[in-house]
Length: 112
Ligand SMILES: [Zn+2]
Image (cartoon, rainbow, N blue to C red):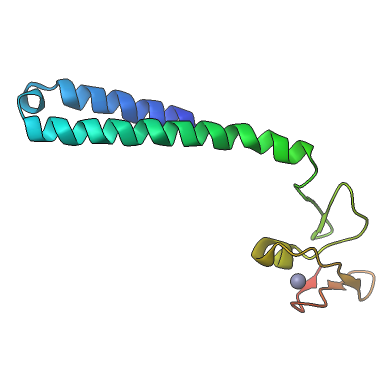
């Protein structure tokens, strides 16, 4: 189930609750439900924006590929430390120790 499906499902559940006789006669609950509906629609809009922006970032080459445990970028040569990139957003080129092992000069993480 995608995010949009979950939101749609939540919205239809909310409709069911608000049309229930025990709820529709209670103004206080109705008001809260209206607020909840507003919240859900704003989540819906935000989720759509997020889903739209995802393929763009892949196309622009900012999404790294993983090779030999390191990140590689479309426009850059070299093997970068995934640890530093994920945590600080820094592109740190790893150093080759031997045939099987690379090491990051910044965080000292060894990468196989
Ligand atoms: Zn590192």
